[in-house]
Image (cartoon, rainbow, N blue to C red; front, side):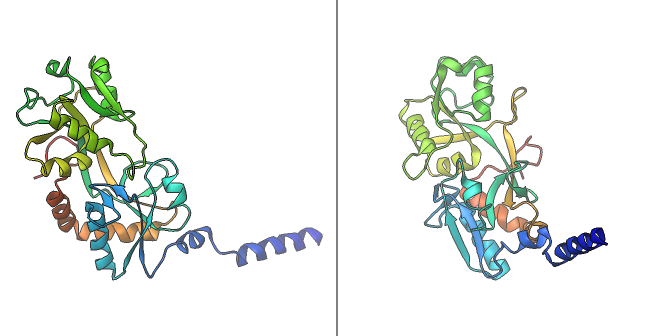
Length: 272
């Protein structure tokens, strides 16, 4: 009898407790599109709303009929923990596919790292990090990124000039610094993530960006970009997937206008 009473009590507790999925879903706002974003990750996101991820967020807010509100936090160590997982915002607009800190939506674009040079540089025709023409020339790269590995494998370690990966971009600007040094000639080239470099290079007639589509070894240079939501929020993920599918042309138009280099899903060629 005593065992039966204990089992009954456990069953009652389980019946009264809301399911885990409901607890997760309750974190999402139904009255606002709450976006987790870096306030100074220009040209992707910016507190002034000028970034291309801001424009995509505005598009989705319009389609959902919801105002867009932001939780700002520098994108680096602790970003997901203190924003998305803390329940203060509900979506990261740009997140690399496969990262286990978030649940990824379907990807909505693919881009790649590339080489930035002056248009009048003798290195302007370089298309791969294995090109011997790069040897002996100072090359900017963010430490810890895939191209840093490929540059080292190509025997260019002594030519690399490194910038930190995780910085507070409100006070430091690695990409801007590298581009300025390429333009001045202090660097012969810089290898930078396309969505960061492409829009900034588009604004400067003296610079060019060449995507790395021909690397034959080392880490891959292209990545698919998704939106990130909390683990377990499957309904919200499906809703975002539907928006991505139905409005892909509008998303592409925002990215192209910004100057983001768009590739096919396999990272082999520019997207037509």
